[in-house]
Amino acid sequence: MASANTSWSEENFSCPICLDVFSYPVTTPCGHNFCRTCITKFWDEQVQFKCPVCNELFHTKPDLRVNILVSEMAAQFRTSVRVKEQPCVLPAEVPCDVCTGTQLKAVKSCLECFMSFCQTHLEPHQRVTVLKKHRLVEPMDRLEDRMCKIHNRLLELFCQTEQVCVCQFCTLTDHKSHPIVPLKEEYEVKTAQLGKIEAEVQQMIQERQNKIQEIKDTVKRSKADADREIADGVQVFTAVMRCIEKCQEDLNQMVEERLKSTEEQAEDLIKAMEQEIEDLTNRSSEVKQLSHTKDHLHLLQAFRSLKTPPPTRDWTTVEVRPPTYVGTLRRSLDQLEETLNMEMKKLRDAELKRVQQYEVDLTLDPDTAHPNLILSEDGKQVHHGDVVKKLPDNPKRFTVHIFVLTRQSFSSGRFYFEVQVKDKNGWCLGVARESINRIGKIIETPETGYWNIFYNKDGFVFRDNPVVCLALRAELQKVGVFVDYDEGLVSFYDVEARVHIYSATGCTFSEPLYPILCPLRHDYEGINSAPLIISPVNQTD
Picture 1 (cartoon, rainbow, N blue to C red):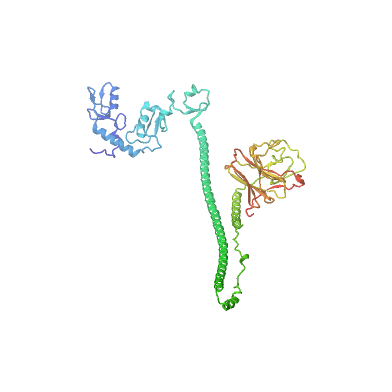
Picture 2 (cartoon, rainbow, N blue to C red):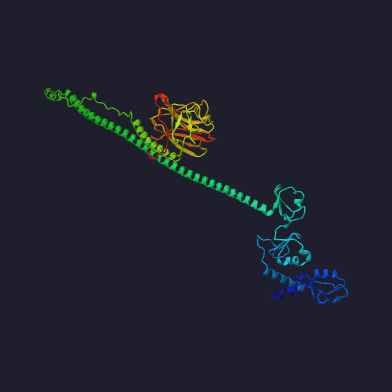
């Protein structure tokens, strides 16, 4: 069948009654076409059955049947017009609830019908008197969710008390005394809150992304540190093994040379004695032969030559002394020790440089200083004074022990600082946890929150229970303190000698740690007035 001619106007396919494109078109006996619903309703309101167009009367109500041809052509025309004049609905738009097949974009929603209409299907609401009274609004999706379940009215207000959407009738009943605002006003408030929430969420996302990157960087640094540590270890142990092999080779060579020299000496002596034995054996044979001769003249003449013995050596004092190897192995081990000391020095230097990379800038906190202590203006030096200053009560201040903490504390990671102790014959320094007892007598051990080394005329110790005695090779000039909070490690270094002093391992830290200094009294043994000085790290030391 031929398709509808899209050049025809809508009038060619419109019902004379509703003026809309035919819907189930039927034909009257006079030949005019109407929507079945329209002509049936028209005849129900009339006394006589007549044609609304030509007014031809029918004696009985005609038997109406759908005009298939007109119906199909009207359907094709309706589809053609929709596609041509109205846009199809996009994903973010509200579709028409009446369209079949391809849905078109809705232009209005009816709050009475609970439906949304495209321009074509909206036409009855613009023409029919009853439908004109319906309340039309901008297109809304899921209209049933926008209606009050109690009053069947549009939810266009917001109750701030119960934080729910309400209709006009709700404000006269259950929400009568509640503050009510238009949806738009509350929408703007909530939108602002959502913006704030979104910003907070984005910040949280960024923080976690930063933390992920931080962790990745830590793993990367850890791998680099591990590779460097392995490489250093391979280098050191290779050098040590080479040294051991060289010492062993030198020892073997020296022992073998001494043994060879002894063997050669013994061989020469044996050869000389064997030669003399041979000469003496020949003489013995001559003597025996001559002793058996009966010729008097011959014996007397020969005896004269035998009377003079052949030249021989006095072997009684000759001896071969075995080589002594006393001290040989020791000297080889001394050489090995010297090589190991050189490698250890390189390692200590590398270790100190490595921890010095975690240097932190510290200043002393006057609120924690014992009243006898005097701090420099820059907060880098502290020494003991003669007079006890009258200071306001402060729970952070030490009252008995001559301690002072830094302003800075550390709850994770690694940190390092150096303190000059030059010209002092008594001092104490290290780190302490935040909750230490600062009032009254204190027992300074890791159990009470202190990780300190202490020096005076009686010795050099790490304060533990019991104390750990430390070796002091020379007078200390500067002490370095390194802390790895997460690993539970506190290490002390002799900065000038670049020597590791002591490490407290397996520590458990659960609160902030503060560097702590104690210059001891200036009258200690008569002299101890020099200050303790927090010094910047000098990598060239």
